[in-house]
Length: 511
Image (tube, rainbow, N blue to C red; front, side):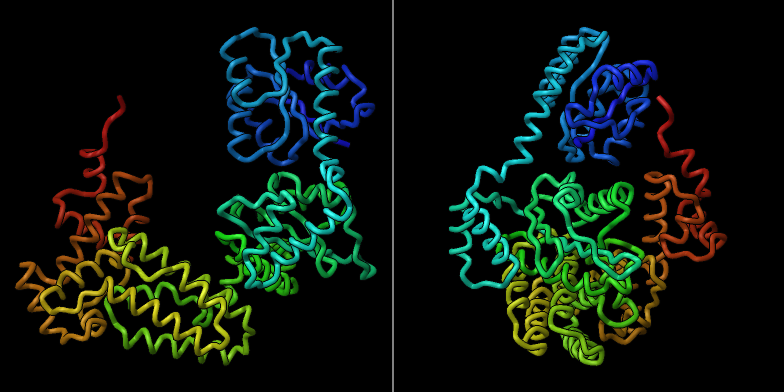
């Protein structure tokens, strides 16, 4: 049965539409009703129906706004608009959004039936799309999908086969999800039927599926892993309702090239291995994997970024040596280590790119670095490559002359003012005597280290007071003051008035 949803703010109209046609005769069943635009959009995204009958004029959100928002959220179902108003502008908007039909109330039964039958024919054609391919072609396409999941040096032949069989892979974003069966109370796994496969993939318009090791593998295109995870969780809930069954889902991270799909697949396989730990989550992604290592040294991107910024190459080498020891002590396998290291390198590059947009062009080749790390055949070689990447980035960013030490310290303070910064600690980081650094600081800036730190914090507090709705105590914590009374004292000293008076004087009034 295909799913039908009715959205109208008049109960009598909804009831009339439900009884107007014998929907089951046309392979439709009403899965939900929306009582207005906002309620309808919420349920539409939850149930993902195949066909939606929607009124135009409703309180809160009209039908056109609902359809536009649903399209933005990648809803693939079909719409028929039902309205009591003959409005050309609404009709024109409906056409631009690809609405199937625009029918005036009172609804003509024959006209509605004609459009429903056409929609049914389109849905059946889409469902039976594979009938256009011969059995040998279908098998060949499955072979290509399997090859995409495996490491391969012969990238050109894969691309040729994809083109030969008309497969759709012209995208810049891919991720892989593995759905493993949940066993029932007797320890038996339920078979993945065609209906279940169709339901679990609902809402993912660009996806290829294949069975590997009794698991359903989805190759998702043009959709981030976070959105894939969100949609699969919604579909899993429907699976529970309709079949009293569900999957455990491992979602690999995003990759930019089809040749790297295998790496997302390896990540998803690793996550699936954590089913015992994460069974309560139902779906896990790379974000959950990171928490496995939070207690150790597995999350090293932020620390490495800090060392790169100050050009501390000795500490970079020491950090990577410690990281190698950490991985060995945990007896981690190759896939686990590579997934984690790649994730940290991605985070590291993103941090540097955000902080130094004017120097991005001079950074080490990110894609080449990640590809080399993937192909490394030993832990030593991989850590050496991470080190090369980090040192090259430090050479591009770091300033090593003593004339610029104050600028470096100020930049460091601007990025880390929320922390408990002390001159003695910063002096150690930059390998200077704290007394000497304090004198240099005073001479060049005309102010003490602590006074400048307070100014930086108060300037950021002023910004937050005007740009956010945070409470004063929350802003106090966000700019590095754990004691709110002390924050008030410093604010008055540097601004001359209280935070409350500052807001009243500077926030624009209502027009």
